[in-house]
Length: 264
Image 1 (cartoon, rainbow, N blue to C red):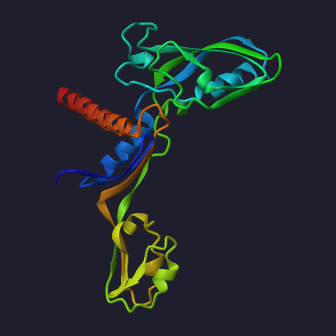
Image 2 (tube, helix red, strand yellow; image 1 turned 45 degrees about the horizontal axis):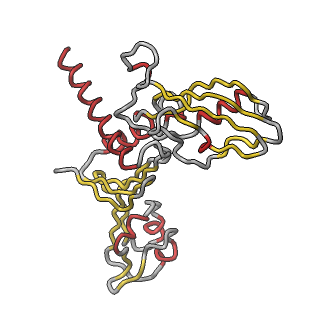
Image 3 (cartoon, one colour; image 1 turned 135 degrees about the horizontal axis):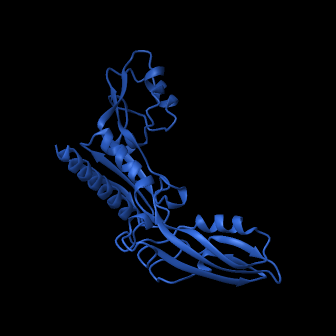
């Protein structure tokens, strides 16, 4: 059977979709790839020239490393994979920051050497400078992977569950399951209890309805080849790009494994 994808919700940063006719291994592979195997830019080195704020240099650098940066996966490569042998525009991006108090310093105050690379959110607070306090620094962003450090994790909330399958047979319309359901998705219809429309997507497979049913009229199971996905991006990529990049990563790894096996 051909794998199918049904989009339920899609915005720039988040998506919800149904992946059908797929294995659990593939579903988990997409989840893991989005979390840890899609490279992204993050501040990795900081040259601090002046810092009279209340934060130590190390604390300030840690905050900067967690600011998501917009990334073009086709333009940049991780340092260890670059052929330059050192550092070049394909390996790094320089962002400078110069601010004096009194004022709140935000991520949008960075000046990037590459106009395509900017903080994904312009209003992330960095530090509150008081009168006379200064911060002058250069931040160097490198490409990296989420499995090395969380600051390179482009996917921030990626998960899935199997498609629930709830069957009602010979229901006596007692209504006990309606009261017991924590998601309020079970209703009494003309033929007994039922779940209408897309409400089944909200089922959490708790099986409380089948437990409370005294005549065993309810069967709760799951479709092993259908998955409800939710994904969120930190802004490094749009969520659509994140999903595509995750799929591409899996394809490339499968190809590499095939080549290794053929050489044995």
